[in-house]
Image (tube, rainbow, N blue to C red):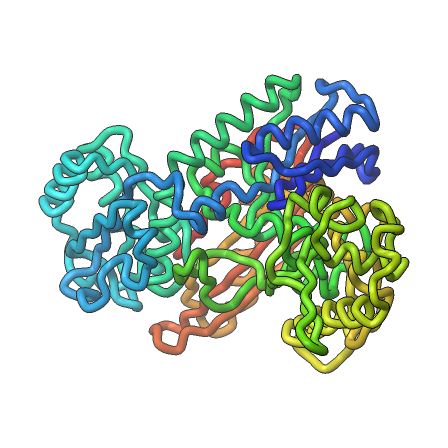
Length: 529
């Protein structure tokens, strides 16, 4: 048995699964201290289906802790950005374009040093250890506890980042160091930004992970704890302590993976409607399509692994407004106060949930409270929701063909059983807790992202090598032998590099081995030949 938990802005959802079966599910209101909500969700599971905590083999958690910390600019450690690239890259210093509140929250410490490589692997300038020694002394004086090290084209050669980390750690024992080649992708500023964010979250990640483990132990759950990653796979708590940035999109990703699992459809559009927002994404082979461009996080451009998801402010708690002949729903919402403020619960605020109940699509609260609502208002409000979501699906699809649509999330009752652009509309059983199901059934992954010099006639050999390494990494990380399969292969010829250079990305996934310990960070880190 395993437990999947997803902490959202409005609700905390949990499921108890035994193999492929969902034994029990629970939905509780998210609390200011989210660990309290997690405890209540597990207790609710036990009330619905009593189980022996000792029989649980894993707890899989999706959390918004870390993305919220960046959005709200809180709980961030004093962090320095060290860039290796002089005499190049001086025109755009580290943290350029960052919002002022986030720069202030981490201290705004930036340093430029010699180092870095050209795109073809040639050295821009040699590393100068004395520069790093002086930086270490300055960091000690300013009580900076986390450092993000970024070297130009470290995805081609990470040697200077690794050496700089050794020098800084030797000078400052206990310093947290994040390296850009382990976090981001090609694109200096975006990769650097992602690495700085990761470094700033290091101390919070330590506290959160320790607190989560202690909380689960306190209620008798001694099974390994795993956190959901942005790509729909799992990472152990040790990996999460090092790379908290990899959890940012775990909420939408869990919902999409849960939608695929519950519906049995691996290629489709997924619409996840919560209490506050709606997320729309595309599934390919059962996994979310990844964003191909930079992603803005809290106003900061980054390029680490993120799903291609469009979010907007429509949910079950969205406010409904009528202006002359127009009716609009959202983007503001009553959120977790829905059961206090919505009309159907005796409140005084007209919400999207009230429209659904008035239309007879859902049996929530007291229907008598909305029986007198104007029928034209109800129709116009629900039509507005359908139109917004249809337009978003149109933006996400890559062809003119109709697409299957899977509806999940408690707020998906806002949507009709059919609408334009959908070849079929599925609302699977347990749709309201699909996010928790997605966390519970998540798999272990192994990734390879390398630049290969592919000689004539050797393309297949290079692909086979990458696929085997991705498979090996998944097995090392804790995947069960015999379950690993290749789910993504991408080849990008790099015309500006010599020697028929080709960037090859491969992802392998497999089921979590029953006796697996926490996945090793090494098995997940990207590698560059």
